[in-house]
Image (cartoon, rainbow, N blue to C red; front, side, top):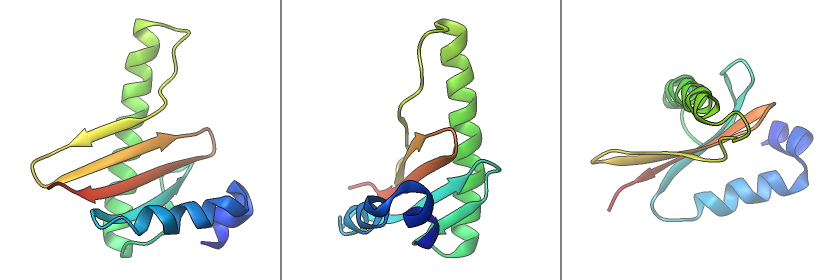
Length: 103
């Protein structure tokens, strides 16, 4: 959580813990620009897997959006499967990934 606090401000750590208090949330990950998990509440293998794939998906979604309208910008990417849901909030420096169980 030190990375979150240092680079994203003092509210980032509190926000991550608040998100994790939700019963459906499995974990949160802060992904750096290179695609590596900097701060996570998940185990390292799960965090690395989600970090890599969700960063790539958000990058492709952002590029697709730019091809449709160059003035538009990706704010949130939500991926829903039968078992899980992942939400990515991209930023220039970091991406926030939240992984949840589906009801």
